[in-house]
Length: 68
Image 1 (cartoon, helix red, strand yellow):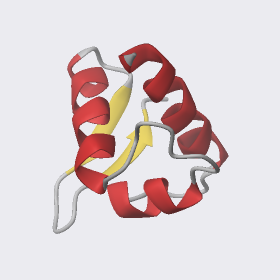
Image 2 (image 1 turned 30 degrees about the horizontal axis):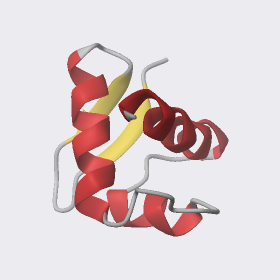
Image 3 (image 1 turned 120 degrees about the horizontal axis):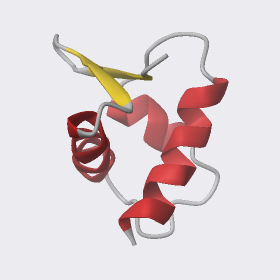
């Protein structure tokens, strides 16, 4: 379920003091339960970025933060 995945990822971003990469987010998730790669993290966040809830900071690699 995408909403469940997003809520777990969102929790990591909410606790972060700076934008994080998908790999950093994956490493901070306590249980991966279906979120098994940085690509999956990026996919989930990309969908929520289209809704305006997440900011994607272009670069190599992309970084993500919650839209304030």
